[in-house]
Length: 276
Image (cartoon, rainbow, N blue to C red):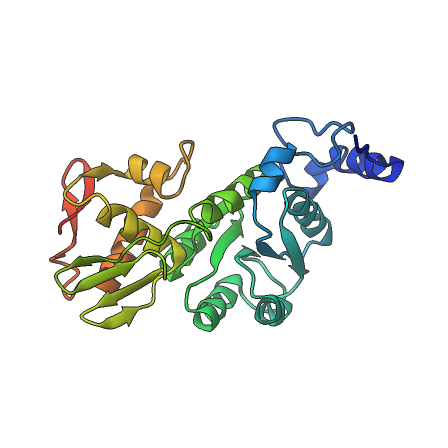
């Protein structure tokens, strides 16, 4: 049986004794024991693909802790300390997920997100790191296409769980599913493409997943909490208003008249349903 080296044990001890209070990061709920320097079970590690995560954070200590947790969870990581570095490294590495701090020294985090979205056409996921008092920035970020946000101080383990969640729905070796067609609307799950009257729509990952989930259950009404559980994969998520933001943004792209939606309908007192 393979055993971790002394160096790996020492590094595990160092991670377990990070000064989380000084870094404004919440400690993990479970202690990372030096006997398991990888911090995760081997089966969980093997289930993850080598997805790439770009961490954009101007505090080196926080960036280091976050990137180490992500690497230990099986992800390839890159770090950028400024908005300009983030744009350059995103172009070079094509990350699957960008963990983006809104407070950057050179370029506003929201502007960085706008440029990232223009460059990748909404294909990569973006998770925002925000302070408690930045509710307006979080709302703007969600409307601009962010997939999720984490409020500081945060647990690195929770951040890893959220990265897992935005990638969990992607199955690169799954069986090809035929497109779903509804009255001029075509949703191709395998190509992750949506056509409206033959014209492609540019949707973020979360918008696509939300539309696909509703379209796979035509006529069935779902509450916001149910959508958070099935699309966001969070049963513990506190603010379900992000569903409302994504529905509004999806309607604006999908419906000829978003005030009178044809496909994504509101069920008053319940939530939303897809009308085939």
